[in-house]
Structure formats: structure tokens, C-alpha cells
Length: 173
Image (cartoon, rainbow, N blue to C red; front, side, top):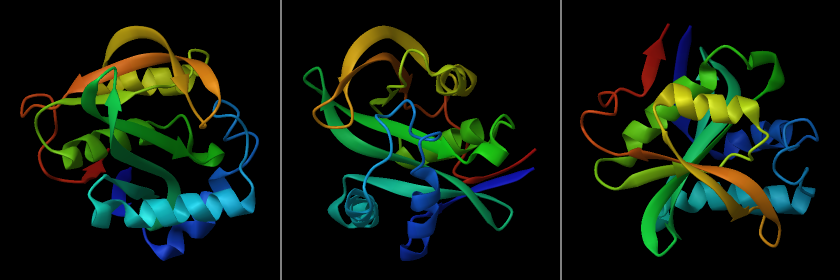
């Protein structure tokens, strides 16, 4: 299986719409309006220019199957990077999210912490964190979407040379 991540482009708006379903957003407060999706898409496109992060489409061969990305934020008074991912239902359960998360972690760089905040009841995303090598810090109240607090697990991965794959953003299984 050849999983790659590619920087987000204007063509990925359709992928974002495919991700914006009740099934895919069950652990994230539900689907967004089309206007909110467009705002999110523009934010993803701006990440590299404003230096706050990077969003990628996940590809299985040439087929877009999900998204993964990270952005800078402050968590408990410390600067961190936060990562998140989505894999479309027909492609779930194959290890694609873990491969994409490893590649995105490598893209963040070295030094500091990369955190993931999946909802406590989101077994699949918590399993991805374990598979990638994140350390469980514990449960926390996490605001997402803005204005809505959810009970999440705080997972972290120290960004060091030893814990991340080499600079390749493509994996073959």
C-alpha cells in the first residue's frame, strides 16, 4: 500500500466536503455548514504562507482518501503543534491514518511536542496515537469546535530525530 501526503491545494475542497459528513464528524461536533467548510478550506490553504502549520491530502496511489495536518498553538501556556487526521470510511482500518500521521509529524520538524486530542470515546483515533508512538498524558477538557468543550485524551509525541521517520513523506506497505 503506497500512502503519501501532498500539500493542500484548491482542488482539495471536494475532499473536505466528503469529510464533512455526520459519520466523519461524529466525534467533532457534527458537520459544518458549507460556509464554514469554505472558511476552513481557505485557512488550510493559508497555513504555509502564514507559517502556522500545514494541511495535506492523504493519497492512496493517486486517490485522495483523507486529510492530515498540524498547526501551532499554545496549550497550557506552552507552544506546541497540534495534529489531526481524517480518513474516508471506505479506507479506514488499513493503517492509512497512522502512516499519514507519521509523515506529517516528520514534516513538523524537530524539537518540542506534537499533540493530538481525540475524543475519549474515539477508539480509532486513540489507536492511531498509540500506533504512531504518542504518549498518553491523560484526559482533558478540550475546546473543539470553538465554543464547544469535549472530553479528550491528550496524546503527545516528542519531536526528535529518533522518534520520527526520515524526511520521506511517502510510505509503502
